[in-house]
Amino acid sequence: FHHYIDLPHVVRENSIDLFKEKLITFQMALEAHTGKKMDPDRLKEEIRIHNRQRALIRNLYDLRKGDPPLLSGSETLQIVVALMCIPMEEGSGMLEEIISEVKNRQDGPGEKDVRLLVWGSPLTETGLIDMMESLNAHVVMDDMCVGTRHFWSDVQITDDPLDGIAHRYLEEIKCPRTFRETTGSFEEDFDTRFSYLKDYISEWDVDGVILQSVKYCDTHGFEVPGLKKYLDRIGIPSMYLEHEYTHGAEAPLKNRVEAFLELML
Image (cartoon, rainbow, N blue to C red; front, side):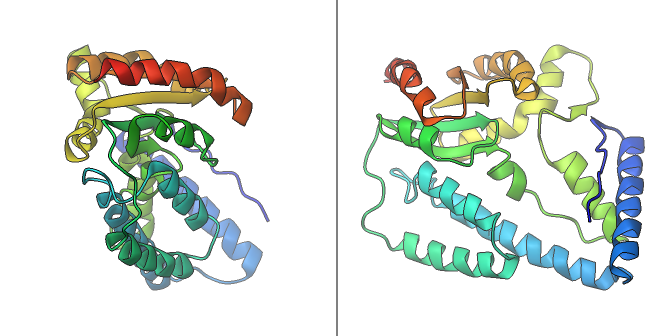
């Protein structure tokens, strides 16, 4: 069985309605394939189960607010990738154990001078984060598809569960593949698009942002100039890394990252 969902690229009231219609078509295809009707109450319960894991992820990320953080960026990425590969209940149980252990760990990341947020393309290997953390930096927060974008916002429990799902996946996920209505000026537009990053920077005490995208990921590449302008405006240093998805591609980037870190000392 396979089914293609054509996701709208613009967030408006009518695009959320359109997305819901796409989800209804998906539901009908699933029901035809399985011979079973989807139970709205069962779907609401599954939403609660997923929201519980999202709350645990937020608790996990809170462990990186301290100085030094109790959890490295590399460890966090490994946990997030594992969660995307195992059943929900098993993953939530694993998260509870990890959070309990990390709160009491004695061998966490040591003292470093710079706290980074990493933004951009999905990463499923830790090499790029390992390279950054091998220098004088902690990666304490991220804005990536394999990271906060996937887990951060809950699905609202609505009378029709598809309303909450459509709203969450189109409106709540802040991804450059989705455009929002423009406002009166570029500055206001930047605030609408990127202000959530200002909140991350404040709460996780971020010193600088590394914008990264895999080569030919145009969706993220096109977003970089506007995002850099926004970060400049709020006084946060940033640098952009375009890279190939191989370990060999990380070596030439190390000197650039090291020079960026030195600017913040």
